[in-house]
Image (cartoon, rainbow over all chains, first blue to last red; front, side, top):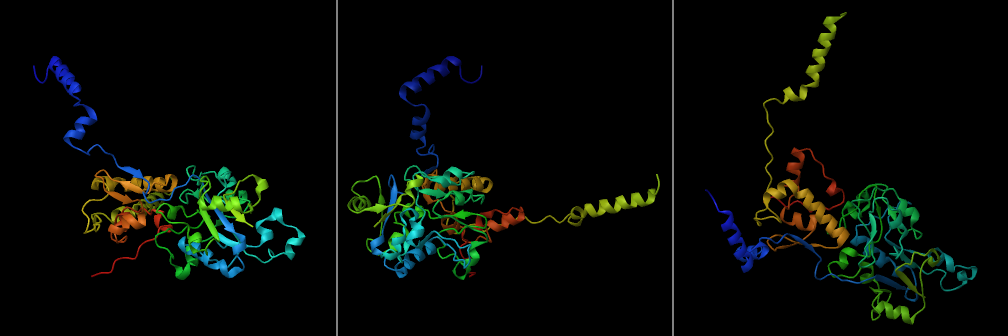
Length: 265
Length: 127
């Protein structure tokens, strides 16, 4: 008879099991690390929060010159093209009070200091985002761990349902190749991709910067106290303190989208 | 059969023209592309055979991990860590897209649309 007898096999197996020499333990003893599969893990330096939020202090914005460096910082960081037509792409931009806060508008606003003030507007990263609900490919999704409404540009089919659904006009569509309209036709930030024709895009709360431990580009470019960024679930955060002490409004609250961008008035 | 001669002649001409690509290139096998491997690194994020056949699967997994789950670091089998980024990681070693990616892709007539969005770093200068 060749090989091992059934009886002997059971004996060896029994003794090995008793000594703990089976399965993973044995592999770890004989060839440490060989069983470890590749893993995907977050960057240790990443900024984390349960619900990222932003507060924009309207008192600290006097005129358009204060807005430009903030908008430029964002658009240069994310290779957002400047297209001189209605097909322009915007991630963050300035608008008038009556456009930003349609529900707060009345005739007499035009007589107040609010009249000519630039109001910075961007994606509100709603808690109840209508764009996510309408997206047929789940290209737009809300990241449950930190509340950021993100886009997977790979999956976007350019149907533009999200643009119709967003009550804030925060989304732009690439009607043509956006690279043609970048400064000198080259990406201004080679570390970040551009988009392609037929894809919708919007502000991503700088998810790619938070992932490496940097605050959003617009907040970095803003003057002191102009824009606050932090965790809305942390009662000790700077943004919660500001929202506690000051009166704040959100855009179109009656729609129930629950924006994460607040305006201190 | 009427017009037998014309029909057969027509068929012969059709077959000859239709098969032109085959007999035109008969006997001249295109050389297998030679890709330029990085000089400073010996081992990619996974085994060579796996990378050769399945790099697109790996890249799709990286994409989903980074975009969907926010996990940006890839811990390889041997414990080395990589930033999951096509432009910033893959092409930092494979510094010439033309001499690495394109040679095989052109040979196989595949046109991945990675570069419609992802930025191609400038080609290294010839020494």
